[in-house]
Length: 346
Image (cartoon, rainbow, N blue to C red):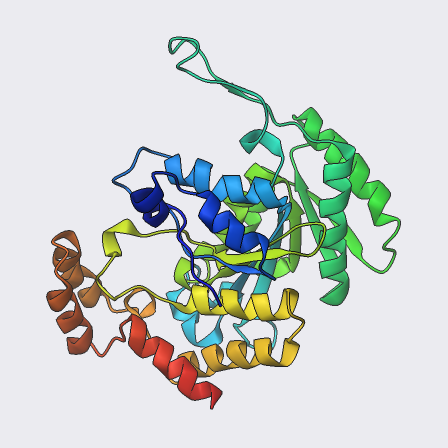
């Protein structure tokens, strides 16, 4: 495994969030295990647009897979009541997979900026071609075929012409997958349903902007973004794997962040890029076992007093005080929970 800078760290060294030195290494790699890139002391959007979005565009990572996993031991940490998460047998654990188109739509379409018009107006074009829609729909159908054989296609076909095209193509592609039930849903209704009755979903497929919003909403019901990995894949199968939640600049250097999303991103990498299913599942099982045995970081501890008490050290960037509070409430720091997961793999 080789390490190279990207995002804020790359900007400090090379004055660019995605330097040629980094791309030279990733070009020769079998997969990319990606950290988080944002930082609040740099111009807004710089590292996201010229770092993260740029590398997605460079490699053509058109399919983003984001599993939102509800772990049964963490049901109480969810934003929903436990009865909203449980099935008929009383089991609270389940997973919702969002398949998001990643290189088209409003994020990559033609735009008119407020600077160009002197603040009079601005616009973003949500443009999609048939080819872009077909290829992401097939990823969604293939994922659904391997799971519960139900695919929710999310659009806004009652208003947007790009969504009308999306829905018509979804119906067309769906005929190639007679074993998969295709369900159409408007994005506003889908958001409401995810927030109130998430178990009705198994695999969701949608365009870039909608997928960005819905995958974060799905993550919220799990209890923490710090649990959730993601995979971005191109047409050749080359992939980049990263936490779904992005950065938390206010927590940098304190040693209190939850590393599970990064660990599970590595598990996805083993599965999708290297076809090492046994090894990937071993990591996932170890994470589940550690949580079942009570391993908790601050974001999933469920202790209100600890949340309140640690705010001061976070604001003051006081690592020693933050670590002391974790110890007081029997909460694990970043290294400790990683060690617990490693122990469960032995």
